[in-house]
Length: 178
Image 1 (cartoon, rainbow, N blue to C red):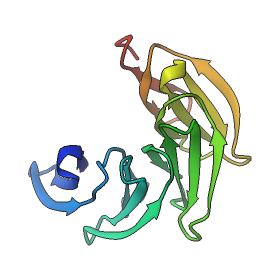
Image 2: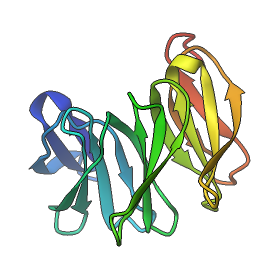
Image 3: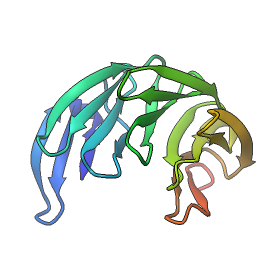
Image 4: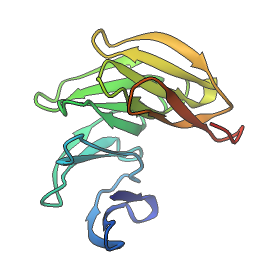
């Protein structure tokens, strides 16, 4: 498991079978969001204060690279094929797509205070929790356009999609519901 420690500006790697920390990496920038590629080879960590995304090799437990991301990079998710990473910009009302091979970035507008991000198992839909709009934005991954918004509880922060891709769930911090 990969666990961020904002106060320590670090990432802990935990062996869940032994329930012990096996490595700690200095990340910087108040690390927050964590996503792991589907194959488990890489972890992606956002740093809102540092304005970057850190890519970690899971096997070697070493930092591969840091990618600058303007604004307040917070929520993060990886595409199922591992070629792209999606980062919610907390301050910029946008979702940023990063092509890991080329480093190219593009963005699409979403709601206020974008936080959590999830990608459907088939990779066709991306869901963003728009905290201050009390809504989720649905993004078509192929066109990278916002195709819908769905009202949810107050201040959705975390979001996930079930394994079948049929349902998305948001953790709504002010209304204390899902």
